[in-house]
Length: 223
Image 1 (cartoon, rainbow, N blue to C red):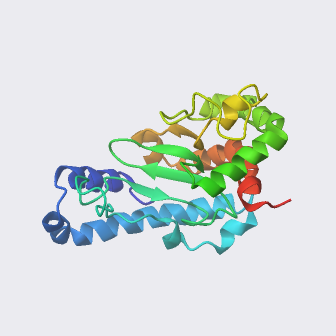
Image 2: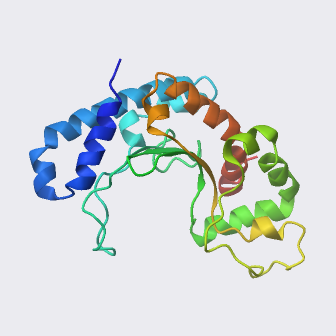
């Protein structure tokens, strides 16, 4: 069995020594940590493939985000992220799923959705709510969804007035006013390092899947 505690050990050390010099000295440790996580991703993809065969064609390495922060427009950010992620559908494969996992010593979570989409995608989601908001409302009010995720995440940029072209008295204006459509739940280090972690990922995916399918249909215009 892979020792997943090694992932957190490395990420803690990285958080406390966040520099290129330290990373260069610990490059071998970084690759060992990455291989440990890739092994877990292989197990996750195999499990999720039972529910969606599209996951079978995903390369585990394509599910990872870069460890380097993009500091071009945010030079105050640390050189490296102190977390490692997994987008089981691939980083940009919105035609499959928006499901997402992020783990790190500061914060770990699981769930998915679309965070601050570009205007075109946001308008597509709002149009889908305008057309069938009752479906989205039913999805996020399901007992399984509520018990696991609680509700859609609410961010500071949620509109307090209606967006252009939508009446403030629209039946689903509270949903339309969102600028992100995500649902996540925190993970503990004990959960991630447990031998039951893949079971938990499967549960999280299944309870998120209806919201996932609503969003995928909205942004891809699939029937």
